[in-house]
Image (cartoon, rainbow, N blue to C red):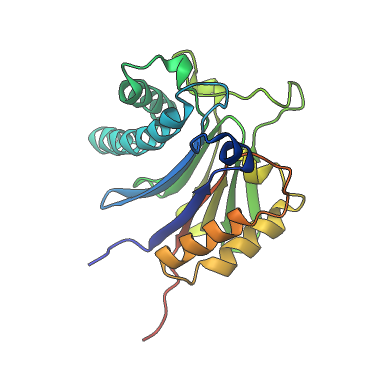
Length: 246
């Protein structure tokens, strides 16, 4: 029997630029649902790096591995999840997974939302993109990289030198969170109304079966209404399953 009320779906498509050049999708996303927790991750490989597509997939795996390590560490110490420990474990696992490739050739952003046993949903962003949460009262909280003091085409990414202070973080009690939406910048940069998009997208797809929701999300991304935006596009949703009377 499935003991978790949390479900997920998502999609990732190559942008027009990569299709025209015959390049692979440099974005990646991954859900995980285990007895010890649930989560979703999205990652955008830095376009100038030769193995950024491998780096983005490695970032997704690294978050799942780090989340498990955090849960084990918290259980052993009977303590709350340590976000610094989580960030350091993500880096350690990412470096291990990409080996023997050079980290500088695999740079990738990392956005995640995880629930791992302490009653909270933990959100983290390294680099650009968007993490948003729909609260139980219908309001939306969102987090994105602040580029007001830097160049718009430069973003933080996983590397041997990244530190916990480079991450943006927030958390919500599980009971206050209805759904989570993560987007890479190929989606996030085109949003004029973040709250409207987040609520509309989640409400439109969460009642569907996961495969159907993912298929519809993919179709939406393939028909993205900003034709000159050449980036790959990825989004992932984690949501609390709504109970129904049978």
